[in-house]
Image 1 (cartoon, rainbow, N blue to C red):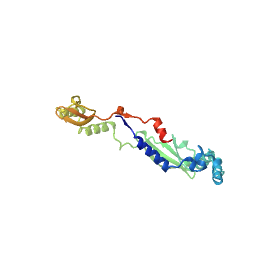
Image 2: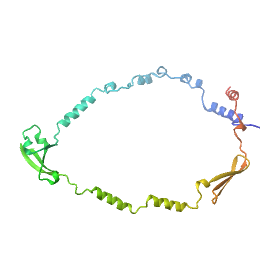
Image 3: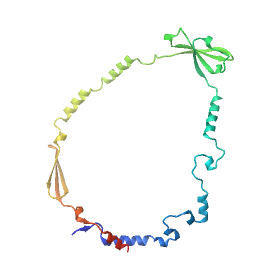
Image 4: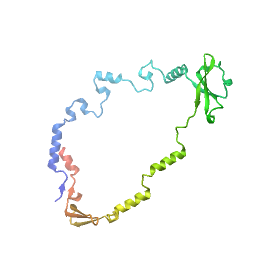
Amino acid sequence: MAIKRVTYNTLSYLVAEIKDRYAEKSAIGALGGLDKVAVENLADDLKKLINGKANAATTLAGYGITDGMTATEIASAISTAIAGTDHLSRVMVDSTADINVAADGAEKKIYMVKNTDGEAGNLYSEYMVIDGKLEKVGDWKVDLSSYAKTTEVTAAIANALTAYAKTADVTKAINAAVAGLIQLDDLSVASTGAGNVVTGLAYDNKTGKFTVTKGLTALTEADFTEITQQEVKAMFA
């Protein structure tokens, strides 16, 4: 005999519970019978709130804000502030004769004059215009003494790797460790018994064989029937 997925009595009880717990549209007032509630269906005070809302806008003026700065005004204010700030810039010159102490903005520059007596040509003397006069404020050079050379780095890497095994050594160690163990190709599955429900599972760790035992027959989709649409509609009649 076929078995239905949900008994008719159970579904009838469910429908009765729904009717008992939830009110019908006709019992919850005028809004209950509407598919969509419009502003006209709302109370006057709620209508005023909705009608007085601000519409979406892309500018501050669109929201009624008239004292905010525009993007152009903000960019202009930033540029003005930066331009009014004192800052130093570096200038490369061949000699102090090329420095014009009376030039506009001369006191805001650091003049780098190459020193021919410098080490490997990487030495410069720094000058600034102070109170209208050129003053030497220091020397500058590139110091690479604390940096390792390429050959030193290569030797350090090679020395650090001496404690690590090579790829060939690792492969050899792995092959030796798995020798005699069950390989993936050795794994197999066999089944015994009748039915479509597994009642037992055994594994042989020497051969790598799994044995599945079947001893029961479970219901399948063919053993069930659907409740018809007519039966469902009859419960809501």
